[in-house]
Each structure stands twice: as C-alpha cells, then as structure tokens.
Length: 202
Image 1 (cartoon, rainbow, N blue to C red):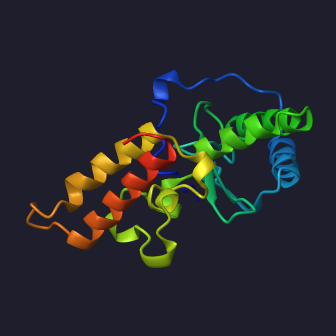
Image 2 (cartoon, rainbow, N blue to C red; image 1 turned 30 degrees about the horizontal axis):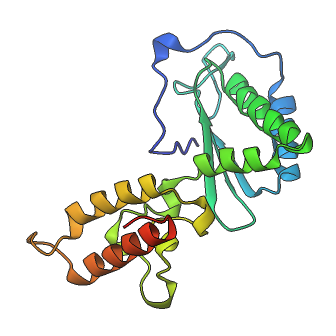
C-alpha cells in the first residue's frame, strides 16, 4: 500500500509520462535495493498500490501509480524519496532506481560530500519531526543550539535558515500569545543567540 510523504507534492494525472524507462519491475526493484545498500541505507521500505486484474483477467495499473521509498541512514535519520511522474508503478520505481544509482556512482567518483548534502535535502519531516514544532524542541543538556534548529551538527547549519526557523517558532511560542510558552521561548532565544555568535554576528 502506498505511503506517500505528506510533504511531497503530487504530479497531476494529465502531466504524467506514458513513456517507458526500459526496466522490468523486478530489475528496477533489485537495482534500487542494491544502490541503497551500497550507500548504507537500512530499513528500506518501498511502498506502492497493488496492480489488479479486471473481469477479463488483464492486469491493470492502480488508480494512483505513485511509489514512495523510505529508509534510515547510519545516524538514524529517516529519508523519503517519491515518484509519480509516470503512468505505471514499474516506471516510477525505475525512476527512483536511476536517481539512487546516479547518486551511488557520484559517491564512488569522489563526490561523496555532495551526495551527503543531497541526502540531507531529502530528510523527511514526516517522521523525524519538524524543528519548528515547539513540543519537539530539545531542552536541558540536549539543547545545543544546532539541535534546537534541527541539525545533527553545527557544520550543517546556516544562519539564514536558523533565523527563519527562529522567526517561525517565535510566532508560535511568544509569551504575548494566549498559548505562548515562556520556557520554549527561552530555549529558542538562547539558541539563536548561540547561532549568531557561532557565525560571528550579533
């Protein structure tokens, strides 16, 4: 059964491609799993709607041929890739296979840092949590400023992104709001101060 990432936009039916990528479904699935395995992915889940047979016995595509891929990296972060650009489940799996294979080859040719950054862009907030959600903001000893802003380490952060997340959080937790939270506001304020110091601004 398809489990589509809520944060991913869907492709309208009228712009989906009827072309074929030239893979069988088995080739696409096996190639995809091999490429992900070589990149260190684990807990891989490939989700899609089932094909079905009509009254005459012909195999039909599901109404929604989208495919969503979920996996976990070595740090425990959950990632999602999804494709519904093609009319068939087979070709949507094939498109994901080609993407992951290209990323794997790029890593082998020495572009592992670039590939890692591409993967960071795919991290899903659908299961890992949105850093702007105040009920998931780390506190106490865990509250390193980069954790508050949703990064695993300071080097992954940018000041512009931290400022954006800070402004979004303040709109939710400011004590002047009826549902404001003084403690959460303090965590976010301390975090943005630390981020600004880290990046050399006031």
